[in-house]
Length: 103
Image (cartoon, rainbow, N blue to C red; front, side, top):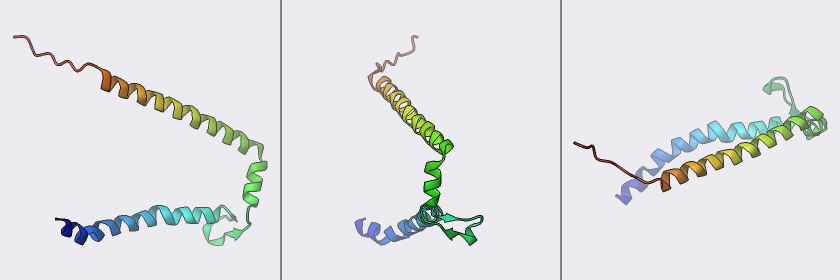
């Protein structure tokens, strides 16, 4: 059984790894590169360094939006974790009564 797993492991892992690289790793690297460029289309991207980030951090509407998003993430995380805790507590601690039908 173990020999079969070792034998067929690449058949199942390599397509998944390829899909992960094509669908996540390459777009992530490309997005990181493009964040340091000025461009209209991806084909004519011009390297501008960190000036995009300097402009963003100097823009008041960006800072307001970033702060609002950060507050939303904090509140949503707290609420979701609280709801999950309450749900799991109710599911685990609730008495499991199964009443048989009365004839």
